[in-house]
Length: 261
Image (cartoon, rainbow, N blue to C red; front, side, top):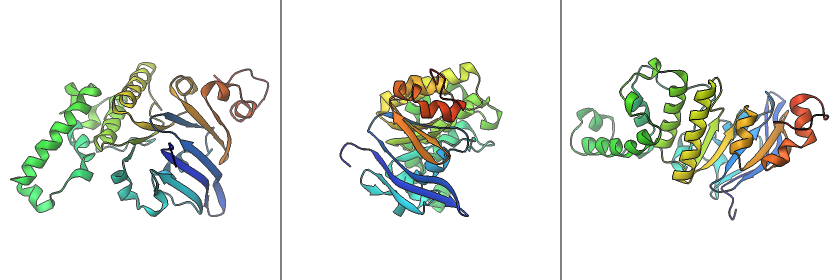
């Protein structure tokens, strides 16, 4: 793979004969923010689910750091250094922010249920270790004031931030973000984008982003892949995508628009 962090090659995914992805290929370079965009139903989340091993494509290859992800069960993906957030918030609403973040540390846990229940010796030392590890994430995402609050009582934008924090708690090198600013106000969008750029820079992460807000995509992406009806129709740097007639037609229904965003 050389310098490639993630390689998707000729992936085809069908459900009951309906092609969701048709021979999709892309390469994600290390420490870049690679956006995957396209109209609704283009296959973006399905592709992310294939990378996460939630879906198994009928054809193709997906490699990450020379590891064939199609041979890895979903619950082992995080152990390879891959974390993700979801299009719909997937948090435990009746638990505190801190407890939700601790769940992101599960791959590092070494004590069993009985030892953890006793909460003594190794179990106690291990929990304190993980609590220390979370301090940097809590500080980085400015969540000190809400850390003991119940997640379900928080505003939507803060819940999205907690989900990002939980993904970071697993110490990934590849972060998959599925519509991280969907449903947010303008200020909430600005905040979460700043946090995404902050963790990318400070933690040296490779990020794959799905997002419909084209202004944000064009401002923060290093490289963009465009899907339409399950097929890749374009890829390149933002300025190339903005002026690609196929992309403009897929979004706006006409090739006569000067710019996408």
